[in-house]
Image (cartoon, rainbow, N blue to C red; front, top):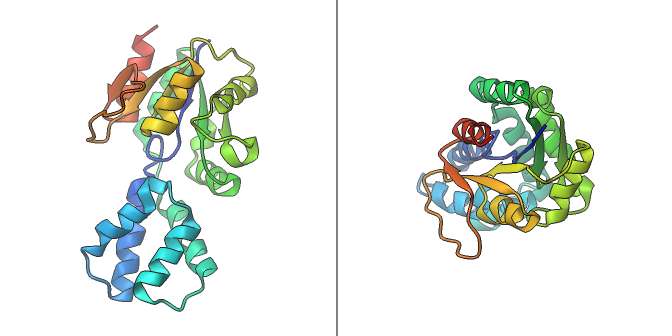
Length: 215
């Protein structure tokens, strides 16, 4: 039974869409120009920037008196409330599991935030397990986090595939762990020369199909 490792944000769940919706709403509430949305998306960097740093950047740019902790809690709550799990992705995971694949999420982030996404969207019901960097004590692209995922599933890492959208964390991490990978390009071009994905796909459903066809 092969191991199917998957990233969470912007792979299984549309975190970017949830953040964009919150950011547009925030800018409207504080009277900021619409074109500042691009600035805020750059600050967030697809979730690579901590919520605290995003909050401080917003407070400084617009001179807001709201406490940083309140803005952080608003951002975290908005992401959880807005993020959605596509039923078609659920079907793809179910088909993969029926075919013998063992799906395990490997994600960077805070344990409470990431687990709440998993449970509130119902994604947890389609997974054998998950590994979150905060509780694991190691972050992608460190190969150790992929080894922990295999240990959690009581499987060998050899023969596993990793699906994710981050060139460094997901594809670089998979290369470091010696496993194959599918990169979700999201309209981007691959530019890294030190390593490359085994396959490339537009979205997670197509990626899962490619992995299943590899057997």
